[in-house]
Length: 262
Image 1 (cartoon, rainbow, N blue to C red):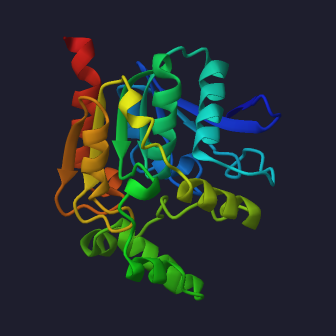
Image 2 (cartoon, one colour; image 1 turned 90 degrees about the vertical axis):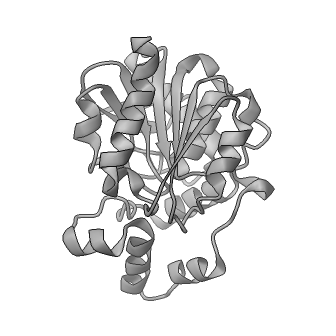
């Protein structure tokens, strides 16, 4: 584990693994780098993977200050700078996809190719989750809340076969102020006006049965980002990248390798 300090003095922890062209992996809301544990080794077989603990998570500092998706993108740039990486492929899922949108829009020279998974443009144009989903995640019973989140992440078949651990349920050690900060950052995300300025070749991936971040957001992103490709994986839920790795992994690898082999 390594760390760098951002311009505002916050210590951001990051991790490096594998070998090959650099690939920055951006996790979901309220999650540390462990979000990627289920697929990290597969991605590291062909890439030098770079993950980070968002401020408020993992081994990073947890300042009680406002968080935002553009701010998380600034932290990601600080990590790339610390590693001397001038340009990387970027793969962001869920809130990490929102962060990746800002990274690609505001730092076009730093992003070679962009993968946006199970994410949304935010703001008034986004398709919000249904009320019953919101209620299921707001239950006062922690066990019921956790079960609801598991069922939004994975199919019943996966949950029967895989006993865990489940890395996509968030960082359990986050302080309450950090958890609130992440929630506000994700909820206030709105990159709609910035999306047409993304120049990096972009692949948009989504699970067809994703109700946590409705699949209807995927075509919105693909239509808004010039030349973006879209692939919806039938039957997949929010954690498509883990449960449906046999589909998603080759799609991502082929997309990232295409230009190098051209």
